[in-house]
Amino acid sequence: MSDDERAPARVGLFVDGPNVFREEFDVDLDDVRDAARTEGRLAVTRLYLDEGAPPELIRAAEARGFETTVTSGDVDVKLAVDATEFVVAGELDTLVVVSRDTDFKPALEVANRHGLRTVAVAPGEHGRSDALRNAAHGELTLGPDE
Image (cartoon, rainbow, N blue to C red; front, side):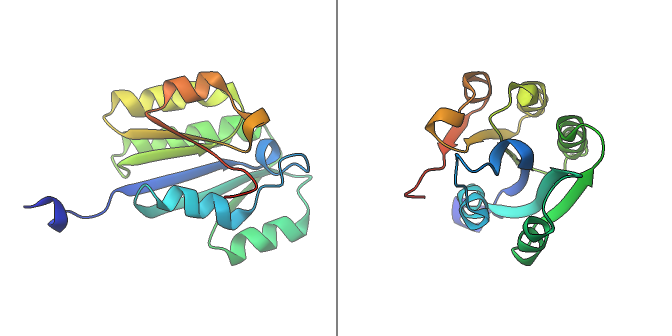
């Protein structure tokens, strides 16, 4: 099979809402989705929020094709566990984590050990986690021009 005949990579997009959708970053849901699409076909598109998330954000995310997970517990734990489950189940080729939180470094490392491509997406220059960036194969920074 030639490179042109191969199916596009199955991409899992996991977004840490409380760390990304903050006024100081001015991140757009469409930009997040479009950034992940540069890696292949979106097989999973999840936005994780805490119970204080505004209903407008939930509606906007769902309108843009995000599966929204609202948790009363720690958003980081739920996102990391879900991402890791998809990785070990073999359902993804690329794991994209959008966050500025170093807590997701172990999830990227598991994905790396399972042979997936990993990408860390930061919500802006000042929202970048060096630990995430260094653990991932690729990195993207969302900004005003994205």
